[in-house]
Length: 242
Image 1 (cartoon, rainbow, N blue to C red):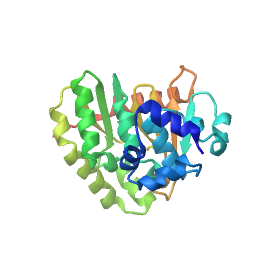
Image 2 (cartoon, one colour):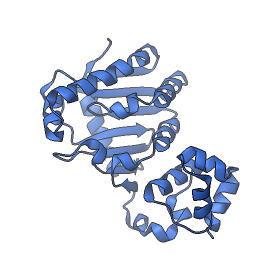
Image 3 (cartoon, helix red, strand yellow):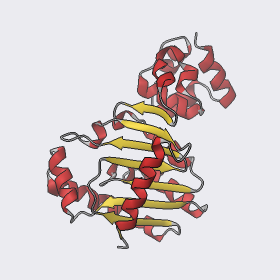
Image 4 (cartoon, rainbow, N blue to C red):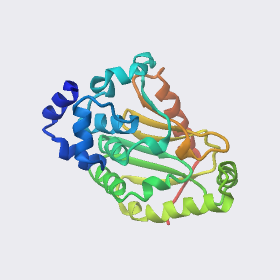
């Protein structure tokens, strides 16, 4: 019996059907978790995000690694694809002041209408939204396409598709999109002091690479390094207004 999970559900005023719907699983699966079965990591992360608690609070026996993480490092996901879309939405929904996105295409976000709605609503509420995508005509985008094994033309097309999908955002006050010509060693997704850093690995699509969840705690913490990097790329990028 997982009483920690049961108490967290009660505190959030959710039942097994609510959790099953949010995670797209069978309610019987959630019942098994309540009875003591430990979910797969991607489901543990999604439940923790849904309930706004730490994964270790729900399944301490399955997450001893969290105790060894350095200050400012909240979690490490083995692959970007392992992060549920609900987690991405919750991440950006948590922002009140600043949302930053740095990638070559981040097409997986542009294709999510809920993400676009969140970005628009956050900008309307006063948050600053800055989106940095690779210049599809630049050599850096072409090189990344070759590195990932999908080809230069395919990578450029992915960026153009993302820009087309983000076109409506250009009319939103508080949203700015710029194109960069920078060699990226990671993609960055920021919501105020919370950062999701998708590392890049040669020969591997970004979706297969690990993601670090960092909290910006001070100027010496790991998140500050990526914030400095983002600002440097932003300062040299060109506005996209098409």
